[in-house]
Length: 254
Image (cartoon, rainbow, N blue to C red; front, side, top):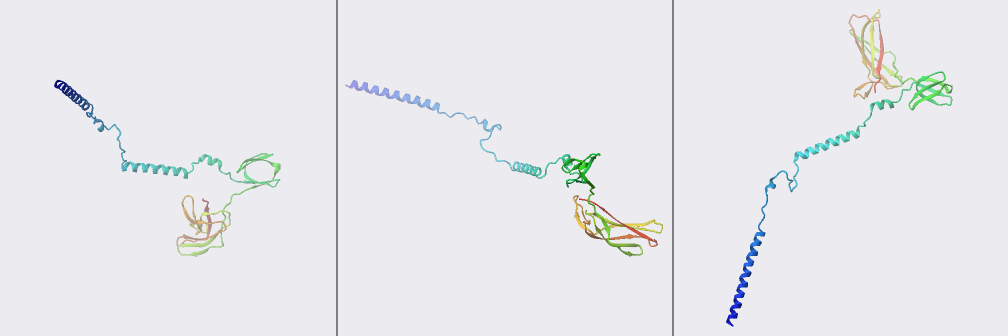
């Protein structure tokens, strides 16, 4: 009986030591498998790799982008506000000047410029193109004159005589159909031999105009309007003036 107990005890001890040895081997293998792997940190400092976080833009970059956007907006607005016209095309579409007025037998009146004419017909350049008209259909042809200004003195001017000068004050009127610009009155002094002694001029006191060139003037007269003038002519003390002449000069501006 005792021998059986010894055998059983020996078997149990054998099993116990065998189990412990296996456990140690497993633990050692586990330790080998769970050892931390070496991390290559070199790539963290390489500049060729993209950062894993977003880099905020610099203030200089933002200001540069804003300036570029402003330039694009200004360029876009200028392209919209300024139409791109071809000057050659504008010359082609300009309306021709009206020099003639033709009355036809059916009562129609046509205005334009005669550019060709023979015994049987004529060609008239109009605002809508060229028209070929038979002369047997024409009743009357009139020449159309462009509107012009017609300036005249209103009566005699007031003459002021001094020892070394003369002054003339008066008025003029525009009886024409167009405004006269930069109107000036000219006086010339002459002796008994009709020789010129002195000459001078002055702009009138007219209506104010702002021209396309930017020039501002108050020497214009609209049709039907009146304007005053005052001209001073300096002369020598011993000059013998027999008569004077006066004239009006003007120009046309847009």
